[in-house]
Image (tube, rainbow, N blue to C red; front, side, top):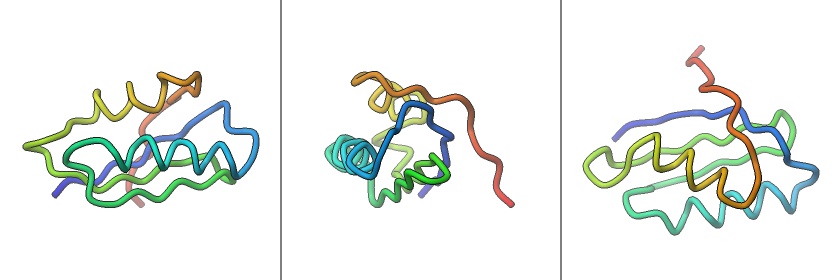
Length: 74
């Protein structure tokens, strides 16, 4: 399993976070998703044999949100 955390612009409320979560949860290979309106992040656990970061980023950006960078692990 791989994990990535994206910083996202364009979320205006918790409903935006729920929308992104719902989009990612339907993506093949995604095992878990945690999207937070504040601080504007999406943490995704995924199977690298079924999904990749570029596809996940594209899924987030399709409805108009913007992935501004990949958060580094602490």
